[in-house]
Image 1 (tube, rainbow, N blue to C red):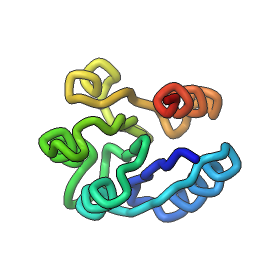
Image 2: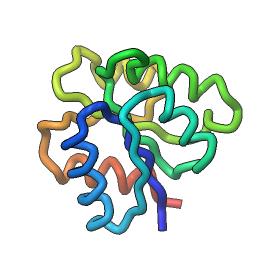
Image 3: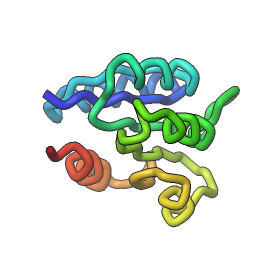
Length: 120
């Protein structure tokens, strides 16, 4: 079973997404901030990271930058999740992300993005 790390500061969104990921056939581990996300990525070596862009303390961009600087986590695909950030998909790719998915977008787009990045 593929493991997905979800990093998002919205508690309700994290719980809802974790339940949805289970229904989709994934195992998930969640956290509410970038710093603990870095630690969990090291420990769990997930198949994919879903990361909010706009978070307090350490935002998604800094989280991605630190993941990419560490040889143990640099290879893990990361999809940014955004509710209203000005970050564009092109910019996300330039930063080393695997993609950008709107939280308010169609669920099939998120499903397709996750399945695309978790295929062995």
